[in-house]
Image (cartoon, rainbow over all chains, first blue to last red; front, side, top):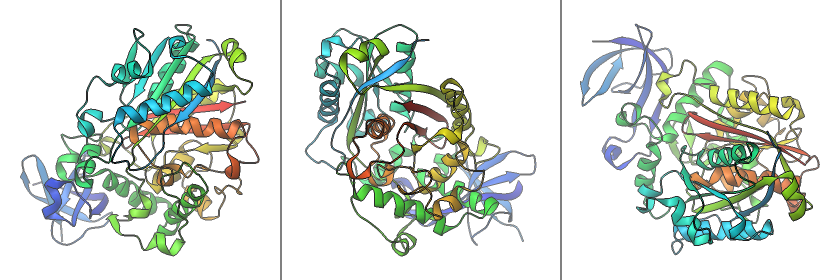
Length: 69
Length: 385
């Protein structure tokens, strides 16, 4: 699975209908090791800019990451 | 290229109007604009409609002739322009270009959006359509969340603070409170702004612009024709439009908008001015952070200094560089497809010295900056007497 660092992040409190069950949830742009970036969901512990993260799974084209300890 | 002049402007009321439909708002603005320019509909040679999401908000397509015929213009080319929140800025750009190039002598622009017929969750979803629906939107990004991520990075790189963002909000509320046409006329304190309900961290309700029904219209013509019609002509000294990636994660640096920089550079060059000649500006404060970055990208302040400059009070009406004397999108309201045209109306009002209580002391050269999405479309206009 891919790893990277958090380029930026936010916690969403007001969401569209389809995501309301998840509120509040964290979205981040991750800088991957190959130099590209991906917008992803972060599960578990909240992350900050510069934190190392690892991908846990993909569901319907959405990547999920967790803090990499 | 011929010199282009704004011959008239008009705005509908801005607000949440349960009983008003899209067309009635557009017609109200258009009629006021025709009257202001002392023109009849038959004189208009081409029509551009700025509208972002009429098909989604109200289920109506084919919007340009739907509006222009209701204004009494039948037979002329009538075209809808869509560039997210920069739709009518872009419509204005195309209208100005067509007159400058000699295609037409009189062109009308109307921007309109009817947003409040949908619940907030659906509005959020429709607005998210201005982002990349194959990536960031699928993940659950909303527009506030995209600008929240921009704010976070700007804070990280330049030391911008929550207080800086709040200062922008307090100032725009202050201006809106003295604007009879503003949707929200309420002064707020810094403490209130800081304690707002969270939308997407670090942004609160006080950092986000409003959901608004409204329309704005502008008529452009040649210098010769304007001389026959008005004794208060306002010249379009420079105008440019530029584009960039739609998805935020495709940009190498999200703390700056290359499209704003590119459009500004061109607009300044054609106006023959430098950023320090700008006396006042209407900037696209869809979120407080957007106003801060716009000032930086337009070269009005040094990179990274927008927040500090705002917190010092320099962008208030009494400050060195008044920004959004109208109240901005935060207080005046943000009917997305109408915003670009409304900004032109507000700059023209200052240049004509018709802003009443909000009239600025220095008012001979003003700028409007209209941003679409998270920076994929930008129009910069420099206007002067």
